[in-house]
Image (cartoon, rainbow, N blue to C red; front, top):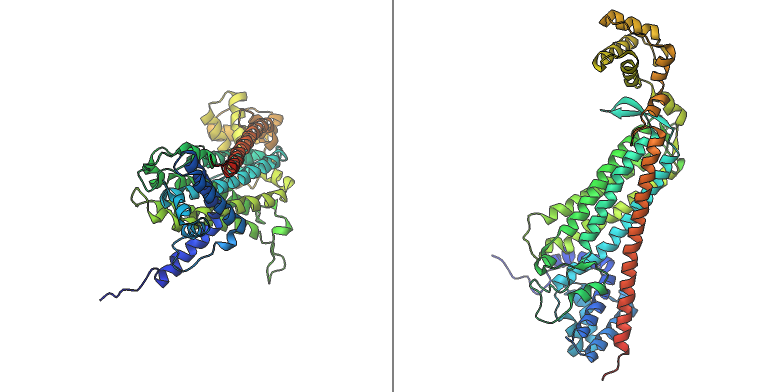
Length: 499
C-alpha cells in the first residue's frame, strides 16, 4: 500500500532532478534570464500593461539583483527552479504589488524556451567561430602542400597519386557545409517565443516584436503553439554536430593511419606525444586518440538530443527542458574543444614530404595515366589499353619489378604476347606516364589534383571563409546592438518622470 511521502519535494526528486537542474540553470540561464526580465518589464510598460511606477520598481529591483551577482541566486530546498528564486527576490525588493507583475502576459513556458534559445545562440556562434578558425588554418596548411605528392586511397588501397592539398581541399568542402548547417541552426534558433505565454498567447496587448528586438532575436516565432512545443532548433544543432563529427572522425581515421610507422606520412609534434611506460621507442599519438574519443562524445550527446526529442507530444514537456541541457550545451562545448585542440595539432604537424613522394607511385598507382596514354598515342580503345596495362602490372608484380623498372620494350612484348597487338611507345612517353608529378599535373580540370586547380578551389574556399566571418560579425553586432538598445530603454524608463 502506498504511503504519502510528505511535502514537496521528495528528497530523491530534489537530489536527482531539482538540484542538478538548478546548477545547469545557474551556468547557462542566469544572464539570459536577467536580460529577458529587463526586456519584459520594458515591453509591458511600453505597451501600457503596467504603470510607470510599476516599471521603475521592477527595473530598479532587477538592477539590484543584477548588481548582487549570481552568487546570491542559490538553491534552497523547496524551490522548484531559478525562476522562482529570482521572482522571490524581486517581490521582496519591489513589494508584492509590483514585483509579482513581471509575470503578466508571460509563462515559465515561453520564458524557458526563450532562455534556451538565448543560451544556445551564444554557444552556436562560438562553435561556428571555432570551426571558421579551423577551416582557415587547414586552408593555409593546404596551400603549403600544393605540390606535396601522396598516394590517394580508394577502398583503403593506394589508388592514384594526388597531393596533400587536394585531399585537404576535399575535407574543407565538407567543413564548409558543416558551417552552413550551423548557420541554419542559428537561424532556426534565433526566433523569439516570447508572447506565447503558456500555449495560446495572452489577452494583454503586448508587442512580441519589441520583446524580440530588445533581446536580439532575428524574428518572432509566429505560432504560439510552436513557440512552446517545437524542438527543431535543438535537433538542427544535433544534426549539424553529427555531420561535423562524421567528417572529423573520418579525417582522424586517416591521420592515425598516416601517423603509423608503416605509413610514415606525418610526424605528430612531441607536445602531443606520450611515451610508453615500458617500451622506450614508442611515440604514441594520443592527442588523436583523445580527439577521436571527444568526437564520439560529441556525436553521442547530439544523438541523445534527437532521441530525447522523439516520441514526445507536440507541446510543452519536461523532456526538452531541463533534462536536455547537459546534452545540448555539452555537445557544443565539446565541439569547441575538439576544434581548438585539432587546430593546435595541425599547427605543429610535420609532413614527411620526401617519403610521401616516394609512396605516391608505389604499387603502380600511376598506370591509369599509362592506359590513357595508349589511347591518345596508339589510338587503342580504352578497354584494350586497360587490359594491356593490367597484364603489364601483373607480370611486373610476379617478377618483383617496380614502376621504375618498366620499359617500352616490355610493354610492347606484353601487348603482342597477350593481345596480339602491335604497340609502340617511346621510353620518354612511358616514363612521363609513370611519373606521379606528371600524373597530378595532367589532372588540371576544375577541382582536380593539379596544384593550379587545387589552388583555385582553395581560393574559392577562402572567399567562403571570409563571407562566414562577415556573417558572424553581423550576427554578433546585432546582438550587441540589442543589448545597447535594451540598456538605453531601461535607462529611459528609469529616468522618466511621472506626469
